[in-house]
Image (cartoon, rainbow, N blue to C red):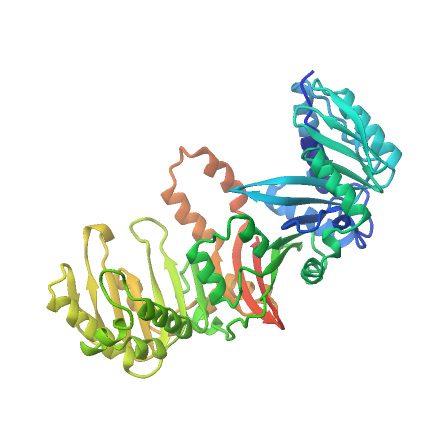
Length: 516
């Protein structure tokens, strides 16, 4: 008989319980975090026996996505059959179902590079005697020996092929990555724990009602554990959103509906103020044929801060500090005035094949500063004989750039009163400048449903499921078996909707996956 890694067996049990939906009741009042060591930067908690609306919604999604009438019975049958064939007989109904509680959680203590260590799983038990019988069965069924041990009055087993420690702590089964991690869970249950920390309590209190699972992340702690390093672009994105990454925490909740899946995020702004505004009007004015689009408010303010920072630091070996804005203004390019003219920003992509692929960045503007500056930039590029630069003719100010690196289509920069577009290909750029002309996303029924799915949260991103899948289908070869297998499930996605807002000192966001 092959070895049966205990942690994998528990993960399998949780999956089976979730999908089978056996039993169920009120899942509130869980005390799982009382067993998580203090300072754990990541903690995941979820319902393994959903009931009521949570269960019916989970089942409805399984039906829509997988097309299976009874998903729980199907998966139980398949997994038990597979385990039997591998010489690892598994009987969920006898081994786990009698004692499995409502909730389960996993804590992660340390981030080592790209991997976590100090991992422990916590599972509620309704019958600790039956849980101990389960432990005995696992220990006896392993080819790799276990040894009995005790810590602070808690008996446990240690060993197996994964060198795990397993035991019953209070009313919970705990499986830990090594003896030390198990002992830390015991200490937490008897003293200081993650649940007792104010930062965790405040963050988890913002988790969404009716969630299937909640994920808590201490962003600052993860940065500290990684040596204080964070990707500069990621740091800038967070700071632009008003979040100090060194102190921020976040909670993501997965909330199933009968025809959609919502991932709801809340983050502590760590004393910062998130940008306010609503760019949904710009988003709704983008082309109706867009397979993906997004928009953000307050772009001009963010750009001005970036320009001021670059001007202050200069460009080593090229431009001395405090000379960038001054030098460009002398040749007719006022960067500061340009940034002050910008308001909101959006982008969209269209096309169903590589040849028809296009898109543009769209900026709403005020005043004539942008059109004058774009005209001056075009003149400057032509005056220094930059290859491939051509001035636009007609009613738009701007220029196009052609090069082998860009492919068959030019990069076009065009401006008119109220808008600036930087697009791939002339058609996409001109459509971007045609504010509200022709059919827009607001005329797309899927976009309307996406807006409605977010409730009162302003929409900031949208993807059309069928249109995106058509493009992917044309770009990915049929020999890619992974994609061919995934298409069965991707076909059920009607739209993706992203929205964001602020609530007091919290930044909130919603990602909705709308199903057909």
